[in-house]
Image (cartoon, rainbow, N blue to C red; front, side, top):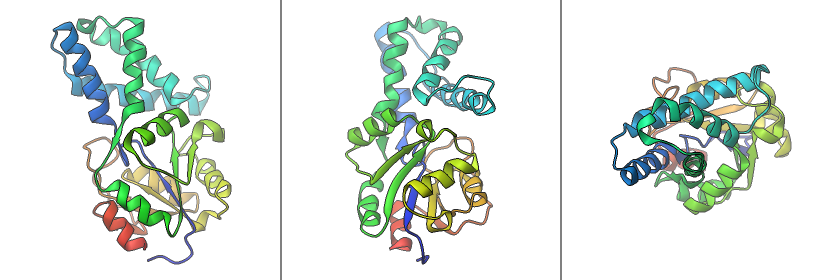
Length: 231
């Protein structure tokens, strides 16, 4: 157990929520309805990758300020051209975009969150929209003490101000706050901003979540292990 921690801030996209199952399932369902074959894994991974690329443009000022819902939807216009076999209408794209609002969680998450909330303030800190994390949390049947979306902070992770502002809003100093994630770059940025860090072994194969060699304050095999170490 690490002394002096008051608040835990969780990354959720890929860390807590299973975005691949939700998005790939929505694409497969649409393809089956059209009686066409499509690589749903390629579609979903491109969707996620391009979202982060466009988010980087928002952070740099090259693109107007947008939330994740708007960026996800804009990327679908690109994917409609890359996957013409789906013949995506505007209504199809709007419907597909809702898949991000129906993400499930890993099976070890609910019990771990309940245990952690007995000792700490437990909050989301994400680049995803507030609507996405609220809807997906309700869909998965989990609760948080707070949901902090960068869309309201005026700055997106991995900028230091995002982590520091989250700590302040939760009534804690950066050094009293621990960022929990499966993505080493997110944790490295949090550490640089003064936060403690907890790395949880990822369940998804995605860019930025493998081959962690950084020095984190905690390394956990899963969320039950995280709760054991912190409680």
